[in-house]
Image 1 (cartoon, rainbow, N blue to C red):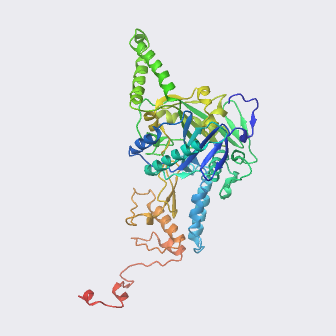
Image 2: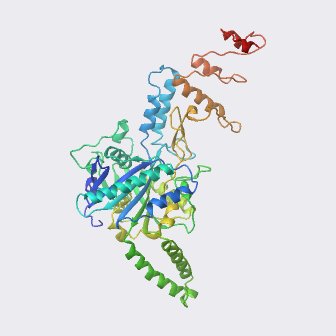
Amino acid sequence: MTAYAKANYPLADLLSVIAYDDDKKYFVMDDNSVGFSFLCRPLPGSDGKEGDQLKSVMKQAWPAGTTINFNLFPSQNINSQVNSMLRMRLGCEDNIAHQAIKSRASYLVNGTLKPIDDYSGIKVREIHVLITVVMPIDDVLPSEKEIQTLSELRAQFDSTFKSIGFAPQALTNHLYLEIMSSILNQGQQASWRDRMHAEAEDDKPLKCQILDYDRTVEVFSDHLKIGDTLVKTLSVKKFPRQTLQGAAAWYLGDLLTGANGIRENCLISFTVYFPEQQAAKDKLSTKRQWANNQAYGPLLKFVPKLGAKKQGMDDLFKEIEEGEAVVRCNMTVVIFSSDRDRLVRATSEARNYLGIRQFTLLEDKYFVLPLFLNALPFGADRKAIDESYRYKTMAITHALPLLPIYGDWKGTGSPIMQFVSRNGQLMSYCLFDSETNYNATVAAQSGSGKSFLTNYLITAYQSAGAQVWVIDVGRSYEKLSKAFGGDFIEFTPESHICLNPFELVQVYQPEFIE
């Protein structure tokens, strides 16, 4: 894995996914392993229950060598959302409101390349959570028993993810290409920007269909270059001593102010490796015995950290004795940028921001390519666990709060209106998606943009063919009414306007008259 003799690589030589079985719903890798994956909607917050639900599916007896990879990926690919927004206007009058929505679509697409404002520096993005399970097999192709085991695990994951609220979408060969292309083909000239869905070809391996023809992987001492995109990796040296479920919602940025965070394109990868349990526990028992002997000996007076080491071992064995599995975990942050200065600045910002969250991250040098490949979906290499020295031993309970499974709210679903969250998430919103009523209140301090938001609401619904009535004190919407060809009615003592709803009644019922 580490013995590379050249500096430029065809990407297909470095990836492992060969094919996808559409009937049994699993991927085949070239290292005697099979796997499945789900594209999930990030959780907008935590109620504390998702940790227990994930624990129930992860604490079962996994085959030794199984890896579960959690990828949080803010993608530039917002084609689906923009296409849906424009598709809702098909058949509607091509008026000024329709043109305004088309302009907004272009604005959002351009916002994936350049920050939409100078203050926050955020770019428009679609945040995905990709959860991948890879299981080793005895031969090149899986046996019927191995396929059955994989199918049962896949069904359990699917059921658990639905109950959590992930809205899981099983990864197919087409969706795999679309996601991987969004990760590896970035920039204005990326092939996926034609807004067409990716379609896998059956006559060549999947790993050969990902990278655009005008790109290759160039390796430098401290970064990679894929086409015109520069890539740098950061590895977690130390995790927080204490954390809680839901704290990972702050990985991408400050939820309260939006002033700090990871603003460049990134990929946050958390890999969970399941070793052979009995051998791992025996090895840990030996280490625990050494830690106990040192903590109660004369060395403690000179090396106070020995007490903390003993406490850590006690915490680990407390979970193991309750039936927890021993796992080895690694967390990698990948930063993408279009130029060197922005890459260096974004890397520093990521280190400082996550440092506030008690993570100690170090830049990777002379080892960037293997770590980058291991951070990709289906990329975790079992041989790299010992060779990379990046994996930490812990119980599943300790790993759960660290999983990157949270992101900003994506809205109600229907893209009548499109907003951008504090961390760049594209939010689709429609008043009529509510299951109760369709009312809304716009409240903010003076000068914050209440009228601007209301104008956008009117424009969005007008462009979709809706009829809009506005009752206003003043003349705030007079110009908008004229622009859309509407009627502006002013109520004054001189206007002599009569609004008599009873004139509309054609048939009078006796009980109504009474």
